Image 1 (cartoon, rainbow, N blue to C red):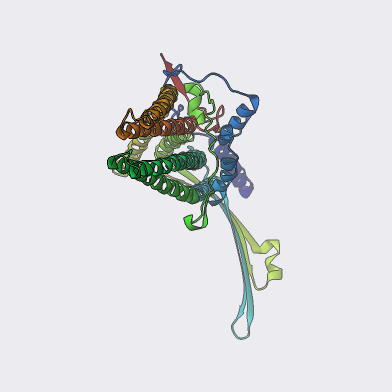
Image 2 (image 1 turned 60 degrees about the vertical axis):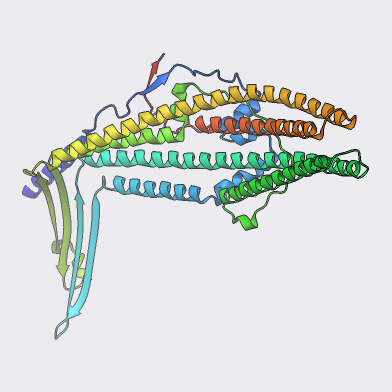
Length: 477
């Protein structure tokens, strides 16, 4: 009868513990509001060009918007060979394993021990069996908050992985288009060098027949050698970009090469999301927000240390001279127990732990808000850059047309004996510089578009948006 009463009481204690296990001492609002505006200061691009392009963006295949088959072929190799991504993948797996460890703390521990042997003269057998169970109910949410904190850390590591992938993809696209622009500039210089070689040959002939000065020959030689030197510099730049691409796809530079090919200098239209949506689109901002959630749960863990801990235990076991007798019920004994523990004096250690947890939450909050502000600034910077570069390109193209016309007129004037070769050299230098500037500005527009895509998150979106981890925002005009 007594054993029955004790068992009933133990069951009641267990039920009460289960009811209290959902308790949490963490603050109720884990994520602070981020300072946001209702729109962008710069004029944002309007609309998508096609439904297919919008679909590529939603799928995270933003590089397909540029329509370059060579870039499309390279991009999947980033996921396969890039070691920074491999590191981020391993960090996600590590965080997930730590989460499983934290969740395991919420469950009872079970143990078993079985011994059998013979000893003495005459030999006598012995056998023993023991089964134990113990459980520390999460009365004040310490274990639950710890698991929630680690769950947020898992989400942060997933966002960091997405950020690392986006950074590697953007770096690859930047290097690829830089290489293709170098190919285009090299092709232009090859044409210019061929023209300079013809001009030098004509000038040398004119000098030999006495209708040109020696200085004209020297100027023609100087112009030609300067163009050749520029071409060598372009080749060096191309080689450096090719090496960078090799590293991004995880290959030794000596085993990687890209043959010269045409440059597709298109710049896609990528209308940005609203500022409030950006917080769930940027992996680094989402990771910072998850760090706030984890720090908030850490406050609950620290507060729970002020309350007593309960440990429930149970055991069954017995001993006999052989295993057959050990299985009989009369040889078995059992026990149930409960222990309540509370720290009385710790010289302020628990208060200090709570203060540290609160300070960690404040630090994570400041980091999150700064990261959000930085993200907004990066979008504004690239929107401004795209607008300015488009205007610059229009003026530079007009300048290139005018410079080409001036070059041709100077050549005609020199051949007619009206102008000196110095004017021809000056006009040629201006025309070449203008044509190269057009290419370089177009490359800068592509790079600004890539930077804008990266600033917008590349089509990524937090999987926890709209759920427990919804990010708070505050709008201001």
